[in-house]
Length: 155
Image (tube, rainbow, N blue to C red; front, side, top):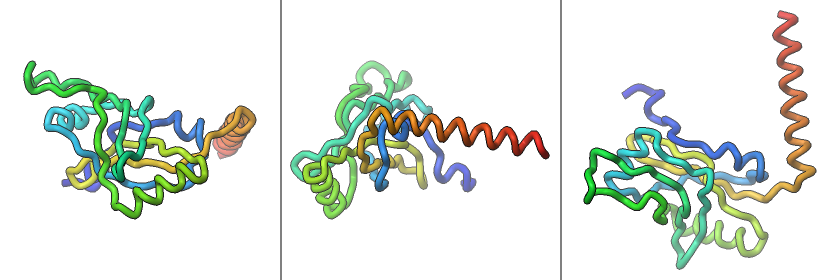
């Protein structure tokens, strides 16, 4: 197996870094059905609308869409937006739960990728940005783009 294939991104949530300040990230395993992992490996997964919540000491990914896998047939299908359990250590789950309830942070999915043949979800402990912060993010990105253009034209 090649090194580039050992961690291959299947889906990213680009909107999350625009809407939130990401404080910490955690890697979580995902409990998936056979048709779900096959569909995800084809890149037919969308986590832009998804969110993570903690219930009864377990972490769950809600509202992430994994499209139906056509070769599985009519009876082997899964519900595309069903809640999926995330595999984290108890300490991590309790830490996330504490941060969400005490500090008012939120847990957002950032990226789904394959690592050593296993589907992983990168989740971030985040704080929401206000409109002013979003404008500053856009200004910084535009300024960086202009600097890069100027550097390229001088070379």
